Amino acid sequence: MNNSSDPGNDVTLTRGGKRATRKRGKSANGTRKKGRKTGKKNSSGNIVFDDYPEFRPNLTPQEIFKRGSFGGTYWRPIYSSVTKKHYKNKHKAYPASWWKGIPNDWLTRDWDDYDTSINKYGVKVGTTLEFWECKKWIHEQNPYGWMQWYCDFYTGKRGPDDQRQIDRWKKTAGPRSRFRRALINLLKRKGADYNDFTISPKVRQTLQHWGYVLTKKDFNAKYSLSSD
Image 1 (spheres, rainbow, N blue to C red):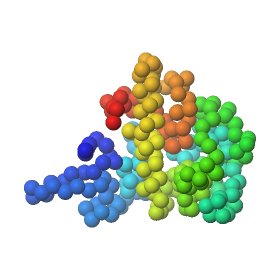
Image 2: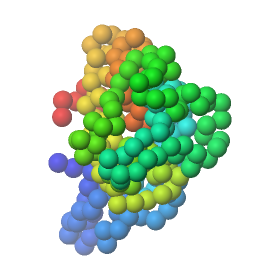
Image 3: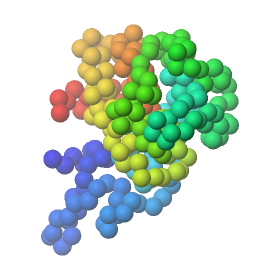
Image 4: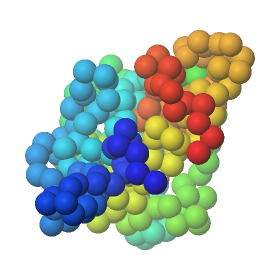
């Protein structure tokens, strides 16, 4: 069922009395729209990518790490069983301005030194790289995972894994994702406001790792209590 309010759904066009559908973000010939590929925030605080308008996080890569994420471990040295290579200091491939004011200890700690006090909501979420690899969530383009992909995508890089990663985001942190809806519904059941951080800190931390923080506007949106 089409829903014109959801940018991830198909668009129905009428031409000379005939109806045709195409995916949002694509031209009539099925190719992605040209335009700005680097992320830019709109007036609502969502990050817009012209070629993938269905992908609307509201935290930049810099903001995700500056708020405190991954217990400080994301950019630790790793060995990838997918690529059969060792990696370290991969965060240095991105603009130095991203890491200004962020201690290195918030970026490259060993997994065994995961520090919940670094995380914005003071809780541990996530699991090991080895677990992600076993689940086939890691592809060779980004051996560190989704966050590394997002850093690349945000700076304008495009690759064969983009749609899969965006679909993962939509299911985890998108407008109708289980985590976002679960958080909103629990807050409303408890009569709490959108920024009551004592409610579901683990869900909030998970959403942050996927580039999203709950806003008042999203909290009040009509679809928040939808069961579909």
